[in-house]
Length: 234
Image (tube, rainbow, N blue to C red; front, side, top):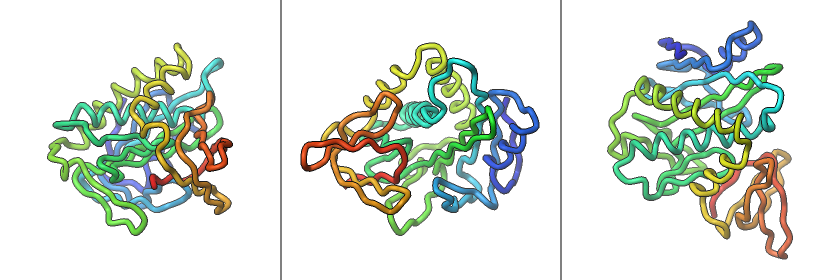
């Protein structure tokens, strides 16, 4: 089920409240505009009309893979939807954990938040506009010649997410990690991971750990497992 509102503060915040009130698994909420949109680590998310601002609710069940790995489910879902829309998907790359880049420019953001047994996954996709950010290049689908409305996009996204969520629940994490790895930057790609405490770790992409964590190969040949960080291509 997809609900649409003209304006709200944050679709993630709204779904967290609905989750605590007993909302069902599979609910989607899309807003034409957000007045208090947010990204990872509390960043503000610019939300002009014309882009996608949508969140969905996943109720955790016994036997599900680790909840944090839903970030990878969201990433492979979004990548597949965008890939099918682009005239040519060349240059479309996933960056850990769930950023989608097109020719090195950021196209979207994904935010996971939890309320008891519910995970709320928010998607922000630059469809018609893209912000001018000081620390990274951005792009939009319109800039790439793609004509799609937010309503059309969220319908495709909800259908694709249901399919990948089924894989996650019934086949485990392996097919998710395999698809993510297939569509991500290749092993050996130089990365910088900026940890929540401010430490910057430089290395090259090695692989994903079994739990979906990022494994960086360091200059001395050792590895560093990263569970939370902002990651930048060098």
